[in-house]
Length: 198
Ligand SMILES: [Zn+2]
Image 1: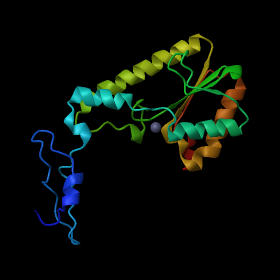
Image 2: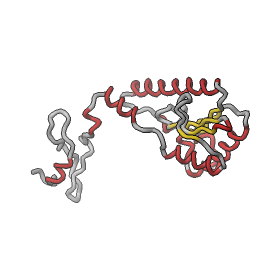
Image 3: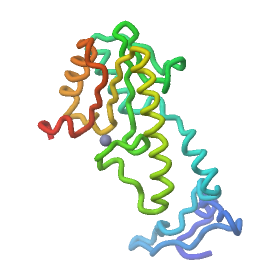
Image 4: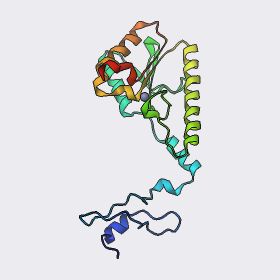
């Protein structure tokens, strides 16, 4: 038994995907005799090849995310009533205000490729892979928005980065104005639209 690795710890360690053994190539020992395992933490995801991993990532539920719940709360407090995740509309909008003819998407900055946003930085490794993937998402989003506009819907996109706590009053105001305007057809709101409050 290697010092610092107890039987209980060994049981908890994930198996090495190739050898089937336990990945014990641990990081440096810490002062208090606990080992840290940064370099070779094999996670379940490492057992899959790139395509499979990407497939799994794309299936991760993106409904009811924290920013989306926030946006819903703001709209509700502004007095609007809505339907959620309407499957019959292009893009399955997160929030739909049928009487106002408004659909709302709450987009994660990374997955939906928020232009110019620090949260949308593509990782250095496999950069081309991610760029292609996110470009595909952006193109799909754009097609869906065009289809909604063509069908007479007004489209509000709230980016995840706009949902910072200090921005919420301004975000709520801006969303309310959009919904009530009746003639604004398309609006995107990101953190940079609330610079004054930074
Ligand atoms: Zn953003």
